[in-house]
Structures are given as structure tokens and as C-alpha cells.
Amino acid sequence: PSGSSEYHLLIASALVRFSSYLHKFEFDAQDIAKRLTGKKAKCQKKDLFLMKELLLEAAIEEHLKQIRQTPTDLEVHASLANVYISLSKLYQDEKKPKKTFDKKFQRAAFRAIEELKILQDFAPKDPWVHSQLAKAYRILDKKEEELHQYEILLTLNPADSEIVFRLGVLYFENGKNANGLRMVDRISSLDEKRRDDLLSYYGKDH
Image (cartoon, rainbow, N blue to C red; front, side):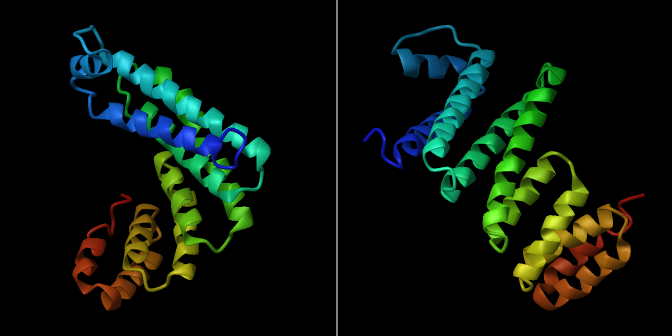
């Protein structure tokens, strides 16, 4: 019911799902027009983009309404961060005209990071928070910040071969070859099959 703690989140979830549903019609705009109206209608790719953008913006607004009611609800902040990430990907994937969406992409990505930093403040030892921050930094191509998040993740999950592998890749990409080689040694004892894959990134910073 309206006013309950889950009211705005449920609406937001439906809006995000609908936006995701539209994605599959990216290359067949006529099909989605027929499904929505029951008859043939002109629908261009740009119309689909605008619909997805409006749906995600509406989902963000529903989250903000919920936060005003429950400002320290970490579930809401986590959900909002994911919507911002989805919105940033929408702008990132839009190829034409690219410059039009640069500022929108940057704004959405940075807002996702700010939401995740709230979670980090309240739950500094939650691996999910740091993995999401790493993902957001990757979208922004901020390798140093992404690397730092993976270093934190490694302290939280030292036996996770995927974390070791990604951290090794980032070390090599940032020219920190000594640290990268340590990750090569480390992954040998966790997943020997990935050792050569990780070692192939050595020297990629040149």
C-alpha cells in the first residue's frame, strides 16, 4: 500500500524491469510498437532510447521518495546505485551522437558511486559494496580507484581466484608489474589453469 516501506521500491523495480524488457527490441522497434499498441505503428530506435531513459529516471525518483522516508535504508541506496549504473550504461552504449551523452553518462556514473560510498560508510566490510564500487569505477575507466577496491576485496576474500585474477590484471595494466607477478604466484595455488591467462597481461601497459 501507498506509504509502506516497500511502496516506492516496488514501483521502481517495475520501471527498471520494463526498461530492461525494452532493450531486447533495440533492433526491432516496429515489434515493440505493435506489442504496446496492438497495431502497427511507427517507432524508431530513438523512441526506444527515450522510453528507457524516462523509465529509469522515473525509477530514480521513486527511490528518492523512499529515501526521504527511510534515509538510512541500505537496501534502497543499493538499489538506487544499480539504477544509476543502468542509466550510465544506457548513455555509454548510445553511439550516436556520442558527445550528447558524455555529461549525462558522467553524472549518472558519479551518482552511482556516491550511493555506493554511502553503503561503504555503513558496511565497510561488505564485499558486495566494494565489488559494485569497482564496477562503477570500471565504467568510468578509473583503473586506480578500481584497483583499490579490488585490494580491499582481496583482504575480505583472500581465496577468491576471480578477485586475484582481476587484481593482477589491474596491476599489470597500471605498470605495477611486481605486484602483478605476486598475483600470478597467488593464483597458481588457487586456480593453476588461469596462471598463464594472467601472465599474458604482463607488459600490456607499454
